[in-house]
Image (cartoon, rainbow, N blue to C red; front, side):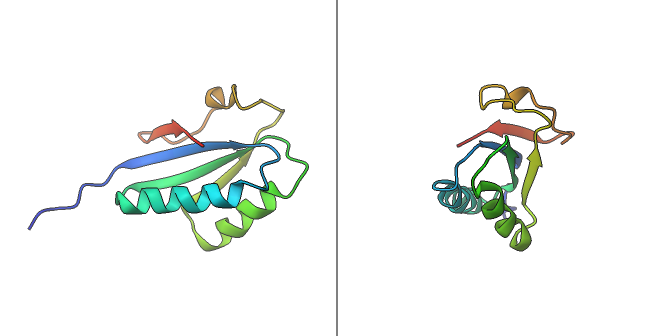
Length: 97
């Protein structure tokens, strides 16, 4: 019997005032990763949203433990989010969406 190959990966998705797109992004990323049978998590880097972006992500966090959110201590801007330190030792991180 062939074993299924899994990929450990964290996908980092910066969000600032993305309430119109974040739910679609979550659904598409979940589908994409599940189809590939990846061992994954989605990390949303909340960067000072003033809309309902964080609330939408929090709703998904309640139902799926692969979805996480971190709040940046100061506004980073999406171009600097990659340098934000994530402590996922041994897990490949991608900057996504």
